[in-house]
Length: 528
Image (cartoon, rainbow, N blue to C red; front, side, top):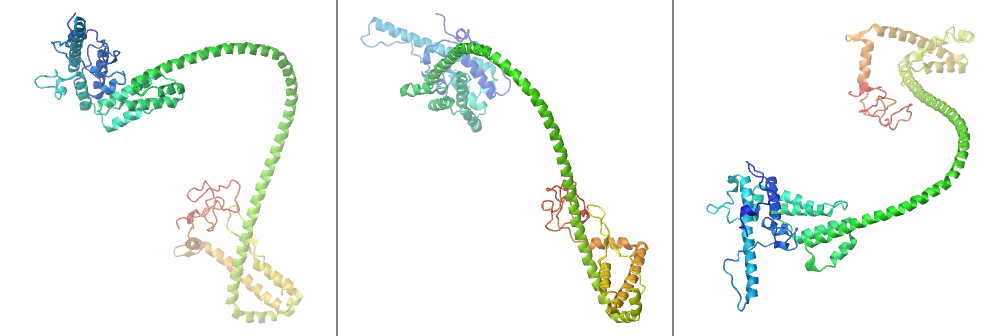
């Protein structure tokens, strides 16, 4: 038998060297060396730890190894050179004991050789200064196992904190897609357990078992297999047995799906043949029905053309009615605004007439005496030869709908009515003549004053400009309201939303901040 040495046991290693680094190792470096070491150890046959994973138990912890095997791993112990036989042992018993001791010695020598080979690969890949913390001053790494070496490297340089461990724990809860292989789910659990073990906080076997079973139940694909698992004895419910149980269940499920697909294909062939026969039987009926449909289609096309023409005619009529309604609405709005302007003009004239009458009370007696002297002439000529001047007109400012029409002054209309009612006789006629004469004089003065206003200067500026400035100063402060149709100069209850006379295209959502290109009337009042 060849001697067991590091050189002889590493001959068949799939990874005879590890990637070397020149800086401080990271978690990725250490994890890569760990996986390479596990593959090398798994390549050497062994009957230990279940006998299916070689010498992997030398590198992984008990928590990680439980994800691979139901049998726990135990490092072989050196039985020593001396063999002790029990009292009364015969030759056959001695032979059995000798073979067992020889096997234990051989396993221990293999353990030492493999441990030395793996540690040599690690020390060749890592700079010496990064292993000082685990290397003994005298014995070096001789008394350090491979498992202890990785358990020191991961927490020292792996930088695994609480946050990383929480993220790793959440990966166990990610749902499993039943259409992916079950072994991919198992590998995810093994990676999470290896990472948690590297951080010094491995999951318990029962925790992994419960979480894995929960993900399988959530798929709803294995109800019978889950019931069978629940019936098993408690001592058989290990994580490794759970993995084996559902790997077999997955194979059965996939075989059933293949068989069902083949059976469904046979049934489909029969159904296709029957469908072909039915199709051939109905082909003739379909041809006759198609001919009838073509005839009906021709009739429907003619009817459709007539309906289209009628529809266009109705649309034109509807458009015309819509335009008429819009025009009528605008006319009604203009009429409403003109009525308001007329009422305002009448009220202003009434106020002006009342002020003038109070100023002229002292002159009424003299005017009446002068009028009485002409009584006889008034009876013959109506107004004593006085010609009624044409009625002055009041011009309102431009409105939103354009230039407003001229409105006759109410004062002159009232005078005419009083004259007609009195018949041109008596003191009333004389009084009216005096009033008419004064009105004629006042009209001349107003015309002269209007001409002078165009050239008169007041405080260094034209009188008309001075008057506009005074009007702006007297203008009330803007209340913040805005109407898309009527602009900024509206009352406190008037907005785009409450407008009672909107024009076509009125925007009800327009505000002072966003006028939506509405009427700018009164925009100069905003900053007053």
